Image 1: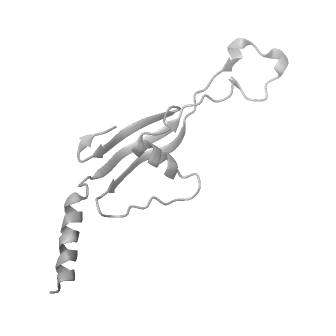
Image 2: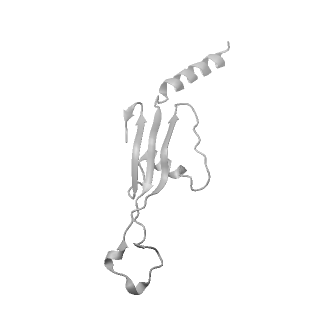
Length: 119
C-alpha cells in the first residue's frame, strides 16, 4: 500500500462520515388543483338562453388531479431520477418535496426526512 492509497482511504472515510445520513421518503402524495369549473346549466348545455333562471345554473367544483397516491424513496449516496412525459407532474412532485409553490394546490400525503414527519 502506498502513501497515496492510504491518504485516499482516509479521505473517503472522512467524506463518508461528513455526508448527511438522511433518508427522504414520500407516501400517498396527492395533489389537486381546486379551481371551480365554468357554470353549467341543469338539464344540459344547449338549453335556450331565453328561458334561463338563476336556479337553472349551478357551479361545479372539479378538481384536476396532478398527482395521485405517489410514493418514493431517496437514499443518501444514490442518484434518484424522476422521469416522465411532459405534464406528468415531475415539477409538482419536486415542489411538494421542497414545500414550494403550493399556495393554489390541495395536497395530502406524507413526506419524511430521517423518519421525522416533515409535511
